[in-house]
Length: 550
Figure 1: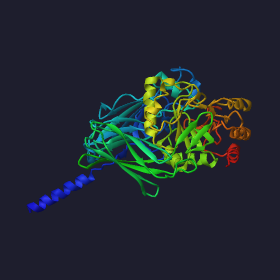
Figure 2: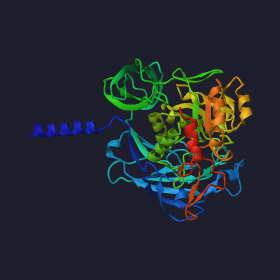
Figure 3: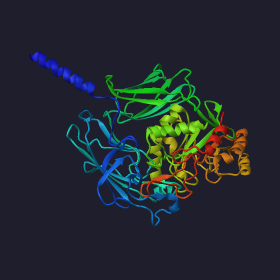
Figure 4: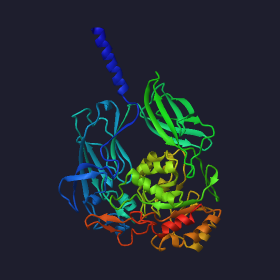
């Protein structure tokens, strides 16, 4: 009998160890987008339906859920704290349980984005410092603040302020030509990793098959190693390496050589997977991470052009907001897919994310279907002050660094860049992608906006590559199709022109739930798209599609 009991206990212990996952696990507290919101307790302090506790779907922009005040940023342009700006706060509460199997792991609370200043309590304790900046993923380590197991409730309390206490955030993000929203507008989730883990991995995979990845560990693993296995789209192993961890080192680099890889470009979006396995000195696996990536090389040849994998590229691009009339900035994977398919249907090969980073799913789809992406730090005509701006650059680049679709980083827009941040992007990007100043001359690119036909010809006589990050504004030319053919014939024939980005993809008309569903473009401020607010195809859609037909 004793032997049987011991055997059963041993089996149970073995099963318990097997149940301990060595991968990164995620548990959503919200929905994953506007199509599957989860109700949280909510109170808005001012505006519509304010001053009382009720329910709200998360993620969402609270105006579209019937709360607060609709506000267009241009009406307060150029002022840090203008009179009449909507400054309501949203207060959120939510309870949840965490699995017992997460006990002893590193537990992180992750917000994909909240607009704007965000304070978080978890089980009555501050999760960390206030986050300022409405378009960025921010993470709190709450390992010592949470409970595990059934019937052990955790309580999260969040206060989101629509106006920031930081004047630079308001000038960069809210005094702009678009709707200002409030709320937890992207998903919220808990994340669990083994206590000893690979905290961050940044990949540099060149078209010749040279693969490098910088890694950061949660803490040094003495005598440990990282095994890297690369597989192609069919799951076939094409490369492998084993990298010893240097004594006392909390970071390092792995290298793998892949022979004759299929390269990534907008025309050939070939993706690979890299599986990283961290093991201790005994060979015990501690943590596994898998990343998708593409082999591709970016070159900016001075006074010549942009080259991807040795081939000169002509950009046929468009600026794009994260936006829908019924949900504001809160989208879903399906809606991000619709945007990419719409852009590609016009024979475009590039998109500029104006004027903030997009949902993670948008980049994944650009990786998969093939679009060149300009990833932009928020900044319209105002700029972030340096200290907070450094944090936001780090959050943006560390989140997005492994997407092969990203070709450029953008440091703001139209004088909304802070020169003290120029060097921050490459701290976290081993690929050292070009950093641009839209409407400025920087990084080998002249990107001046809205030049006339004759002025554009003069700009192409400059030594820098001419690539306007905005041209042919959809409002003022009566439709993009009215002038594109003439401009494009000139641009595509000039050897120093790398193409450009039209302004803008879609009208930004928002559904006014306080006005019986009226679609409000704020007069003519938001009505400057190639297509309508619900992606209604107008004459310019068909013209762009034809002019940019290969």
